[in-house]
Amino acid sequence: MSKQMLVAGMIACCLVMPVFVFAADKPPKKGASVKEVKSMSVQEQTALALSAAPPHISKDAGVMVFGADGKLTEARKSANGFTCIPTVMNLPAPDPMCMDAAVQQWVTDLTNNAPKPTNTVPGIAYMARGGSHFEKGGQVVMSGEGAKNVSEPPHWMLMWPFDAAGTKLPIAPNPSGVYIMFEGTPYAHLMVYQDPRKMK
Image (tube, rainbow, N blue to C red; front, side):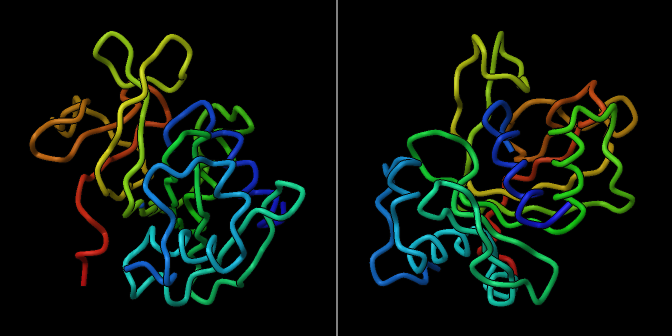
């Protein structure tokens, strides 16, 4: 599967699940919609995408942007294994993400309804602009149907099997800033509410 297809699949997947220093002279306003993101210039989308990761990662990361047809296309090749996109979920506030190859595999598996992720090493993804997830009945859920959207602060994610029983980690957002998202599913992973832009 090509990188373009893989990341495009991630976008489709993240419409039903939550799935990280502005380079532009005039960064997109906070309330910009996904439609507006898609209508941005390549330079503006690139700046937004790269804002998802710490500078030492974004400087060599690849970038996928939306073309005139609304599909993701490669605007810059990756020199470090990370790829950044300008937005993930089809929601009012843009939420760029920058991910490594293992996360791309993780998301591809989820998109293809694989029984479990097949990445063989932990994957890292950054959302320095924050993001959102769905909650229903006080629980974080994978589907947005009948659930409310909850905003998340800047964070990064570790895509690797985590079990609350074994790790004793929380399964919902809490003051510590660390929890297991999607606990009880093969796609459980670690969420860390820590601003990637402050990493050195």
